[in-house]
Image (cartoon, rainbow, N blue to C red; front, side, top):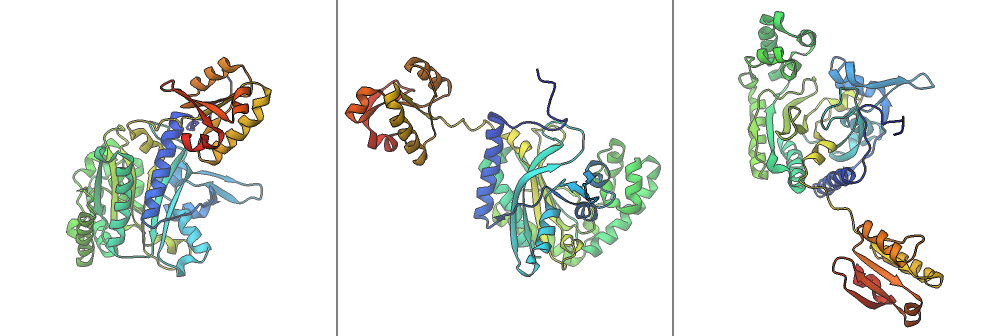
Length: 411
């Protein structure tokens, strides 16, 4: 066994696992495209300020989980821990704030230094959508509907529940924040160290604490509902009506938060019980202040992100490995024709392979081991007759097929 192993929290995607991964990413890409989202690719590392400024100086990601280092020029750079900040930076950098709306899909690796656990890695991969520009609740509903359509297309929706909450507008959150400060101050002796820090800076984030003691206190905390302004309540009512029109089922969960100041109104999570305690597979919300944090104008936006590895674990079965066609020449004279057939099959969209050496028996054994669905056998007699022997490796049936017809027969 090699002494060199993957770094802790990383893994290789090979074989069945790679096929699961590809299935999630490709279906998500196709569904997002029919919803009108264009794919963007942003850099894997950014100026550290892109994340420190936007994710919040007190957030767990910034304080505990970012891979941050100085490059050789002395600049502080960070491997991206999530995709939204980079998309918003790209929007501003490329002057697209005057060309709204922008509907963005992304897929790629993210990096967080956290304890590896089931479906969670230090290098992991996400898909995500961002709808930038519209302030209407219909935009939120469409983004959620796109996520739901992806889960349905993957065949995993029956195991997933959409949990939905509102964070209201700024006036709603200010009133709610004051109520939370009052409540948690009365229980501060029992709060965790992290939650005591959050109480001073951002008390909404206490609602998302994973500490068991905090969670018992949170159970009795007030909800935002009594503090919603009329405008915020109207947005919340319209969002739920739009989701019903899109045919997206949901349950309300008043404990879902996005604890940063630029988040407002919609917050949601798609959760499952099939992956243990860490059951969120897709989550998002409205973040109307993030583009402004990047130096752009005040710009409404809403989006979500989902872990590819976690969604891949929910697939009932991995997509089958594509079955190739084996091209088998018998003798040196037939090899040139075999290569011609091989390339014709590939040009016609047929996966085709040819062993480099061995007699007929050895090459047929390799074809079966590779899971080939058919073999195209070319010998000296076949060359003279202008055809090849095409054998169905599933049924064993074999017939002579003219060279010109091989591709159409096997396509």
